[in-house]
Image (cartoon, rainbow, N blue to C red; front, side):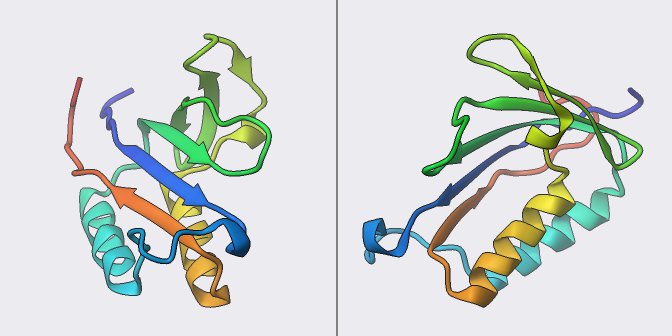
Length: 121
């Protein structure tokens, strides 16, 4: 992989009844600026860690490898097991999830870590 990128995206989605109204929420402006920073990197091959917190199947941290803008590998960091590619998302896909939640009024939190080019290890 020519470039490696390590970003940790923490995406918290919860049912409306279980959300904390005083907790930090994702905003359209935060999303916009995160997308601008991401686009400026012009990365098509990268690796990142995704941690979901939701009422869904797997909430272990996942190491996702993207090659030519497509998910190429998904690994559960807690077990070391390789998972089906449909468990992974690209960063662009994640932005779409956040955008849809904001548009639909679904409670969602997103933390955008700093983006670093080359290697962040």
